[in-house]
Length: 484
Image (cartoon, rainbow, N blue to C red; front, top):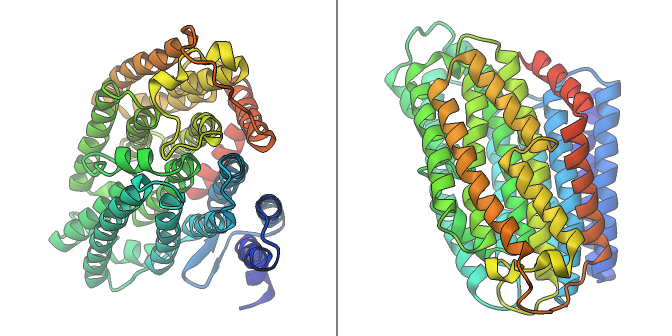
């Protein structure tokens, strides 16, 4: 390994070093505020390393396992920024509940490292390494609170079903390796380049791989774990699970499909079509029946990953593949901003309670506009962005997906997007309406400094990217052009 290789790996090396430093800080100076400071500064330093690499180095492979290019750096930036905001929210959550859970923040950094490795993966070995680094850390993060057994139940469900999905994924990889003789994405692409029709083994392998990934992305019909785990996990963990974890998985899925040119195989695309359609309809319809905020957001996330898959499938049709990839990446950024913000409000609401459960009953949000108008305004902005209302980043993301779908002629999926968005608007407005009611209790809600700052920054991003998205659009366009 030469100097340029080490410099290309600087973001991964930096984040790994930060994890080691935080481990020593926890061992010798146990203090939640100090640990949070070290974690947040470490994530900022990692982001600076990503910026330096993107400016000074050309795209390159570092061993066959890792590729460092604009695409990997874009997704790494999204993952690290998302983890930074969630780190601040997690500190406020645990400090408000009187829990000195320093190790929780270290586990979050480990899972973030796994997400960054996923963004750089060009080989199934590094893919599995990053996937398990994310997953093993999440098992502990889901079950971390010291009170109650609800989180333990959620962690056990996630552990068992995640283990099944990983086994399914490995089984599919074994089939693909048997046919192609390679575990690298490019090697598999070269081995199948002259196949006019996929062999039975390629289809079986790809089906198992996509089923495993669909579980991690909580796409229907592999979504059964999502509402229970989202509800049982601590609010910061739910935010992390819904964003950083899924962002890393989607980065690998998109790179694998572009490298492997999986868009050639009609049977695979037909399966993804029905998965996307089912995710949009099931996610939105089941969200109508929920009275808990975290379960509403869980089903909403299933629908939003379905929307994301529409942009992904648009790259397969006759049209502008670059536009479809561009739309998928921008929509993912919009999803990160709005989802972290929405769960951030739940985190702040839950941070001052000593209950075994988070504050996520719809009735507990009644009168929030009268008790904490700024917090209610932030939450309303996030919900409206999830609904795709103009002047929010969610509107730009959905518009992008719709444009890619129109150009590719995916009319059935676009109809599902329109119907799903209409249904979604109803249950988002239902939450906003509850916040405008007269308060049934006068319980004081404290907004901590760290969590309030994180939520404020996310809200600014939501509005700025909704009004002036040009810099991010240009960045995403450049990355999509380089990938295709």
